[in-house]
Image 1 (spheres, one colour):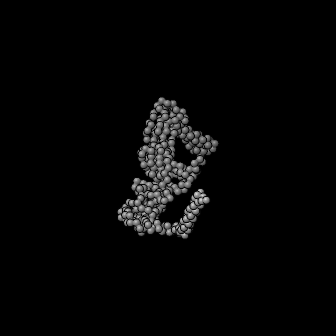
Image 2: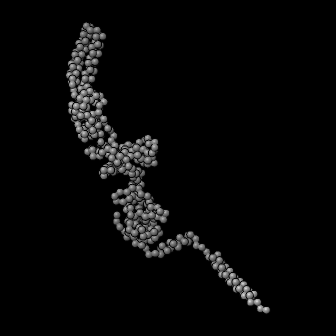
Image 3: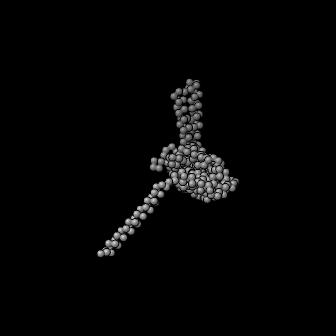
Length: 368
C-alpha cells in the first residue's frame, strides 16, 4: 500500500540536501576569492593618494617671500609700580611749628625746607658759643706765647687747648640745634603728605612729612625660575599700565634670592618719571625680552592647524604645498612672529585654508 507521508518526507529531505550542497559550494568560492585577493601595502596607499592629489587641477594661491629676522621671545608678567625711596621726615628738636613750608602734592628738591619749628633762644646760644670760642682761642694763643718765654707751664697750655676744644664742640651743638628748627627734604621728590601743621608741638621723632622719590619709578614683577637666566640688565622693556599708558624702561635689578613659596625672582624695571606722571602702586604689565630666535612676521589669520592639531603655516616649495609646525615668539600690532621656518621661505598669504600638504599650486606673487 502506498504511504503518502513517507513519500513527502523523502522529498523534503532530498530538497534540503541539494540546497545545502549548493550553499556550501557558493561559500567556498567566496572564501577562495578572499584568500587569493592581495591587500595593498601602506606605501602603495600613500602613493595612490599622492597620485590623486597630483592629478587634481592646481589651486591658485597668493604667496610672498619672507626672510627671517632675529626676534626676542617676550615673557609678559603682571606686577606693580613701586618707588625706591620713601623719606619719612621727623623732628629732631622740641618746639612749636611756626611755618609749614610745603603742602601735600608739592615738588621739593633735596635740602628744601618742609616744616619750621620756633627758634626760641637757639640763635642766642649760637652767638654765645661763638663768643666763648673766640675767648678760648685767645687764651690758648696767650698760653702758647707765655710758654715760649718760660712763663707758662705745659699743663696750663694743655688746659687752654682743652677749653678751646670744648667751646668749639659747644658751638657745633648750638648750630645743630638751630639748624634742626628747619626740617628739610633729604631727597628730591613728591610731597605725599605733610603731617605737621602750624601750632603743633613737636618732640624728637614727631612726624613732619612723607616724600616719595618718583623718578625713576620701578615696575616690579616676579619672574619664574626657568626664565630668570634669560633676562639681562639694561634690556629695554615695554610697560603697559592699568591707567592706559604704555611706557619704556630698562631692567635695573635681577634678584638672586628666590621667593620661598613661588620660586620666583624679583626683577625691577626703571622707568623715567621726571614729571611724576606715573603713580606708585599701579598695576603694570611688563614684557621682558628673553632668548632671541630667527622668526618670520605673519598675520595671525595665516596660522592653520595640522592633522595632529599642531599650529603651523602653509608654505610653497617647487609649486608644492608644505606644512611647517611653528611656535609664536611674540606679537605686535602688525601680526605675530613665529619660529620653526627656514630663514628664506615662501608663505601662502591667500588660500592657505584651501590646500593641503603635497598639493601642487599655481602661485600669484604679492609683495610685503
